[in-house]
Length: 288
Image (cartoon, rainbow, N blue to C red; front, side, top):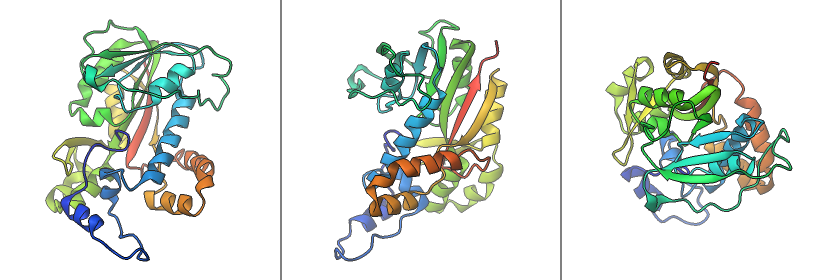
């Protein structure tokens, strides 16, 4: 979520979190939405979250070097990881002032496909990430739209149609969006009970965040239908993570070396069809 998320917690939660208390007191309980409205106090969880995301990306990347378009924004570290695995990557930026300064990233490649491979080129381009008018049709082997970018672009259909256009036949896209689970948690935290009662059956669920921005949330079925409607073949939809932030914080708090075991546990749990995660991850292919 934007290196976690780029929003602030609600004022009530912020006041509660900043209130002085004895060092021996346990930390105050945190609402489900507040876990994802700020990352400052969730260092352990977000370290786990992005470790999971890195392995998921490594497993998804094409085995053979190709040309990848990354729409995920300057905070997403998937672009240097894909380049380290041998792919030529074009990453889109909203402005030249937001050019990322990535450290070297090893080619996390659990299947070994990236070993002993020359790194690909990594180029940043300032362009509109919704309407990819600066790119010709059928020029990319893969498009990555992680970091919730398609939830932040409320007319998601237009962005998906452009992804379909720039993909070569047989090319694939990997995307991550906010789920209805997160949307309902945000509505509940803001006491928006009328909207919450309609949320599970809404055709389009738009949810306000504490900072005034709006996100579009999806069920797994809705996301799959959108991909099919623009002409893509759905490969799979699953939660990005299913382990709760409190569980991860507790485990890593007692055993900081348990990160790899937690990631392995998470990857096995996320293979289920139970869309309980706050973010959904999907992969789709353009027909040949």
